[in-house]
Amino acid sequence: MIDVQLIRAAPEVVERSQRLRGERVEAVAEAAAADAERREAIAEFERLRAEQNAFGKRVAAADKAEKPALLAEVKQLSERVKAASERSSAAEAQAEAALAAIPNVVLDDVPPGGEDDYVVLREVGRRPAFDFEPRDHLALGELLGAIDMARGAKVSGARFYYLRGIGARLELGLMQLGLNRALEAGFTPLITPTLVKPEIMQGTGFLGAHADEVYRLEADDLYLTGTSEVALAGYHADEILDVSTGPLRYAGWSTCYRREAGSHGKDTRGIIRVHQFDKLEMFSYIDPADAEAEHARLLALQEAMLTDLGLAYRVIDTAAGDLGTSAARKYDVEAWVPTQGAYRELTSTSNCTTFQARRLNIRYRAESGRTAPVATLNGTLATTRWIVALLETHQRADGSVAVPEVLRPYLGGLEVLEPAS
Figure (cartoon, rainbow, N blue to C red):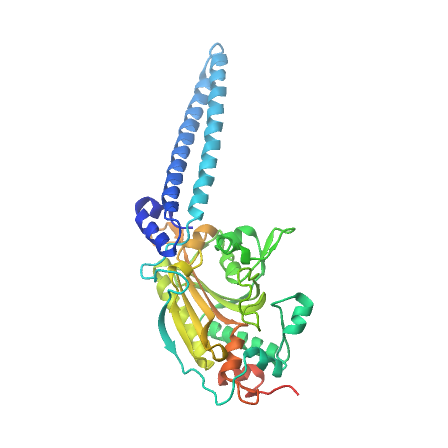
């Protein structure tokens, strides 16, 4: 959640962020009022409790004749203290809920507007041109014996699939390439849980506007994660970290699950928008002063992967109204998909500033000796969807696909993926 001190000292900053996001500006005043009520209720409770303690000493020192009357007053005071405690608890819960309803404050130069108001920062690479009619990724995947949508639907329903043969090897190769890049960059690899507790899912900000995208196991009160970001953020919940010598960086490899509840009729062909996929996610815990530099670093790692895989792509600065609850800024990296004649998102990286850390109580010790929330950042380094752009970009007229040189060591030296006989 956002820093309550910002609500108290500079509510106009939060109001501006709300306007940029297209969110309720009134929520700021409501949070301020709830915070004031909380502080007043806590002060009243502490005053009455101090009075109760002082009165208790007076009763203990009183003579036998005075005690009956004093004990009657003790009972009345005890009831007032109980009522004040209940009011304080209710005010605390109300204030927490009001603060939790406000998404992260966007950074100053984030573009205003909604989904279509992004700013293109750069386009990199040459879009492929073909002297034949290019096949889409599913047609290629079926020719190669790499993707089986029919049996995925038979076993699990729509938007499920099998990667088989070279398709399975291609995904594993991509993930291993990404993992090696992450290791070289100082990330510690983690294979993360894909089921998490409600407080972890809530803490990372995924139970807000997009809660309908999350699978929940009601009998167990657990959630299936749509990204290993959730488990990575929860890894250091309720801890004080040492970031004095640099950030803690992790690379989480996991299967991910999304209901895609709001995407009926969109990208139903192939593996662009599916319910289950694998992903390698970078995650950094860092001194907030260094967060923007770390964001640029994560983006550079993503761009290097796409460049080395021979993919044409663009980087966009996502508009405020299209940011998730936790992100103060997000860059999307979109690869060119030839058969769609469009750029499609392959990866993104978000600076969540201290928003998630406040919710999950993750702190670091500042130079002053006091503890403060760390900043958290995330960014995807490889995922199943990358296969779409790879197959379409590097296809040949006969349905074969050239393997980018950087990926060949992970496929046993294969230079070309040949159609299955």
